[in-house]
Length: 140
Image 1 (tube, rainbow, N blue to C red):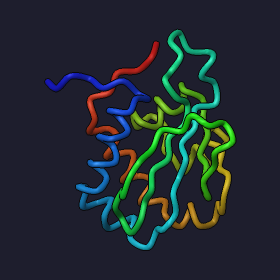
Image 2: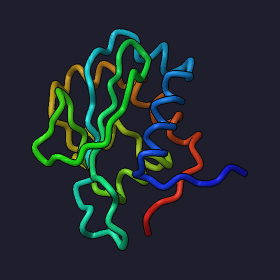
Image 3: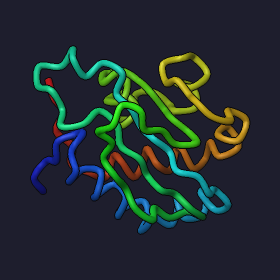
Image 4: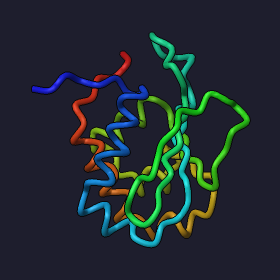
């Protein structure tokens, strides 16, 4: 079995971006999407180990991930920002919470055009399936 990669880490985000671009399901479902999305952990101080960063941005375009970057500047933003507790990110990545359901129930907060994000619900599902392909180690 492959070594597990810590979430969040530069290595995990790099692997995620690479696998998104290689995923036929995401390539199809994400066709037409043009905006970067920032993913943020809302409670990094509650973790036993402080992550190197609590946000990262994926530059997504037409079913591909063009690049990714770790966000260390608290004032940084993107057209879409998805924010959840670390525990909820873990549940989303592990497939225990559907990302669309998480948005609608407030477990995953959305900044940006919610109607546009919901139009790409199948892309969100594909993104979770890709994340599940990464052998992931979590902060306890």
